[in-house]
Amino acid sequence: MILPGATIGVLGGGQLGRMFTLAAMVMGYKVVVLDPDPDSPAGALADIHLKADYRDAVALIRMGGLCQAVTTEFENVPARSLEILALHSLVAPSAAALAVAQDRLEEKTHARDSGCETAPFANIETVIDLAPAWEAIGAPALLKTRRLGYDGKGQVRIDSFADLNAAFLELKEVPCLLEGFLALEREVSVVLARNAQDQIAFFPVAENQHRNGILDISIVPARIPTELAERARDMAAHLARELAYVGVMAVEFFVLKDGRIVFNEMAPRPHNSGHYTLDATVCDQFQQQVRALCGLPLGDARLLSPVVMVNLLGDVWQDRGATPPDWSRLLRHPGVQLHLYGKSQARPGRKMGHYNCLAASAEEALEVAMETRAALGIG
Ligand code: AMP
Image (cartoon, rainbow, N blue to C red; front, side, top):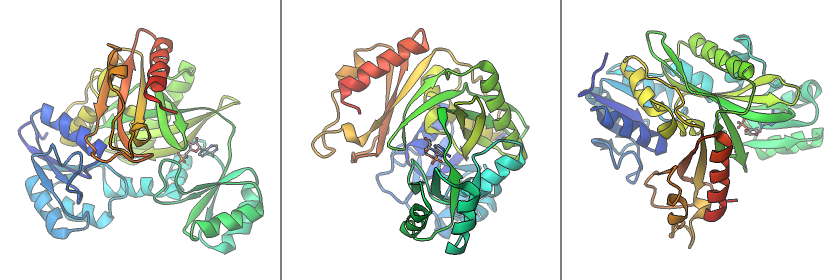
C-alpha cells in the first residue's frame, strides 16, 4: 500500500488530471503532473508540474523518480512512455490495458471475446477492405476511425457504398471500423474501480444524453430495469478482470429498442459520465482512482441522492469566450454544485466545467437541470 504522505503522479493535466490531483491532495498525497501546457488545469494545483512532452524521456525518468505510483488521464499515452515510467515506479492501468482501449478493433474484439454483445463491425485497413466490409455490414452504418476518436469525432454516417468510399477518403484512409447503426433506446455507462487485490466497486449506472457527439447530461440512477443495470455491471466487471485492470474504468453501453444491452466502448480512466459521483456518492471516482492506484481498500460507491450532471461547454461563454455565464442563475438552487476546471480560454465544444443537480428524486433533479440549462442558455 502506498499511504498518504507519498508522492503520486498523473500523465495529463486536463480536468480529469485536476480532479485526480484534488482528490489525492485531500487525502494527503503529494502530486506530480506531467503536461506540456503551462496553463494546464491540473498543473496549476499540483505540487510539481513537469512541463514536458509525454515522450520526453528525461521528464519521464524524473517523474518516475519522484513518484511511487503514476496513472494517466487519457488513453493515448505512448506505450514507450509507460515502459520508461514503469522502470522507476508503479504504473496503473497497465500499458496492455491502455492498448486495448486505444483501438476500437481491439476493444470491440476483446468485448466480444469476453461474451459481450457488440454492434456488428468490420475492419477496414485499406481500400481493398471496403467492399467486403460493406457486404458484411450494409446500411445504415457508421464509419469510425480505429484510433483517436472521441466525442463523436472521426465518425461518419454511411448509407451507401459510395458514401463509404468517400468517407474513407475523407478520413485519410486511416484504419477504420464499419459498424452497423443500431436503434438505440438509451445510452448508459458503468464506472467501476478495481484494485490489485481484485476488489471491485461499482458506481450506480448513469444514463447519458449527448448533443453533437458530446456528453450533455447524465441522469442517475439510469431509468432502466434493475436486471439490465446488473447485467451492465457484470459485463463491465468481467471486462476489467479479463484485462487484469487496476484503476477506474468506464464502460459505455447501448440499450436497444428491443431490450438488448450492447457494449460500445471503454475508457481506461475516470469518465465524464462519472462526474456526478463528486457530489452524489460516498466516495467519488477520483478518490477511488487514488485508492485503486495506491492499493488501498476501495471506498463505498453507494448513491446518496438522485442526481443529474450537466456539462458546461465553452459555447455558453459570451464575447468569444471572455465572459462566463451568470452563475447566480445556477447558484440560487441550493441543490446545485458547480465545478469549473480553471481553463482560461473558452472555445465552442471545450469542456469548461459541469454542475450536479441533487434532488429528492431523479425527476426533480432533471427538472432543475432543464430549468438551469435554459437559464444559462445551453442548447
Ligand atoms: P462513440 O464515439 O463510439 O461513443 O460514438 C459516439 C455516439 O454515436 C454514441 O454515443 C452514440 O450516440 C452514437 N453511436 C455510436 N455507435 C453507434 C451505433 N453503432 N449505432 C447507433 N448509434 C451509435
